[in-house]
Image (cartoon, rainbow over all chains, first blue to last red; front, top):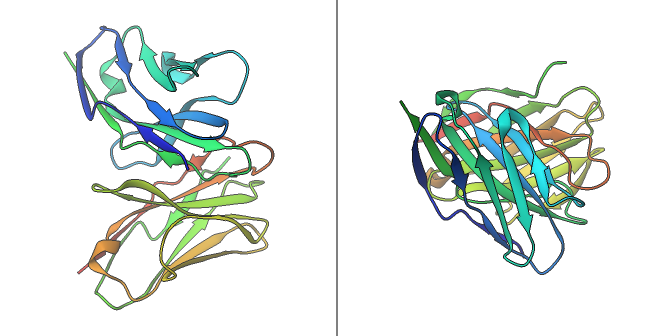
Length: 114
Length: 114
């Protein structure tokens, strides 16, 4: 079985500051990793994904994440946030043969302040 | 390209009733997955359908069921509703091919059980 831990339920940050949202996972098999964003009253949108290859993954809206197998982490970063980045961010894990059965973390609410 | 469409967007039911939710995936997508989102449990996988066959199933009781039609549209049904079934039900579509792919989520159907 897989599990995902998002260590911070809320992260406040000032506009133009850098941010890191943390994600750790547990799995007995090789995994695929994802970050999704959910804006109020909307569905989820994929930010980026790691399937294989380079451990540094770049996504939309200037976000990037680094897969660290030894630390079982997949932290999300952005060097300079904008007010419009205020949303809830979910880390998720899938696995070979699991199709689109993803296990999600509990989410991190990013609040960008002026 | 039209996105994932879920109907109805909002509905209110009473305990013991049943409900059917509908999802129209993006054109050309053959996989439809359903997730339940609640404040307490977060996002939990219900089931995935691919080419009219259930490919994966989560850990929900038999009251939760689904199906997929030949045009890839999907429905999920919850019978004998309980208060705890109040949630946002999200549908996601993907091509369903190969490794876990990018999921495109609808805006969800918000179910309130009184």
